[in-house]
Image 1 (cartoon, rainbow, N blue to C red):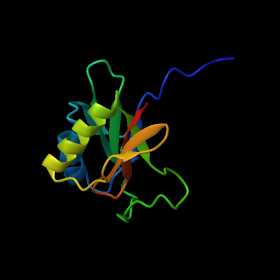
Image 2 (image 1 turned 45 degrees about the vertical axis):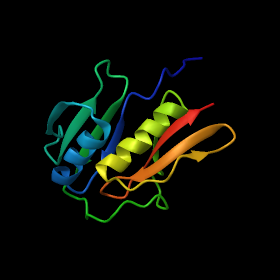
Image 3 (image 1 turned 90 degrees about the horizontal axis):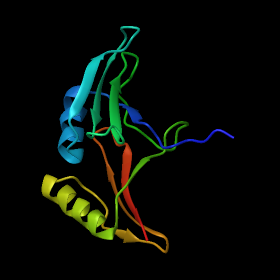
Image 4 (image 1 turned 60 degrees about the vertical axis):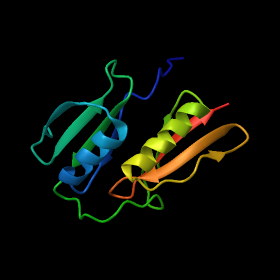
Length: 132
């Protein structure tokens, strides 16, 4: 049976690249590696990535977007969760979010994992998660 290696990238539709692009760049500290129009000419995108392209975040704008805030209660994306190495890294991320003024949950320790939850400018729920 064929197997998946990992998720290659996440692509998020945003209402305003001028707002979301600097927010994602500031929060995740990933360099922008690509930007441009969509192949059909309708809308555009930016792509952020780490050096080995193992973590990639794409932001897209579409002319048909009505600008309404994201809601996980509609069909489609519920949230995006990024795994971090361990609990200490999760605490470092919590401190970083606080330093940046990004509203977030405290570290929530569960039986199998710990998580910090926050939202982007369009209300997309993002998580940082550590196991163990």
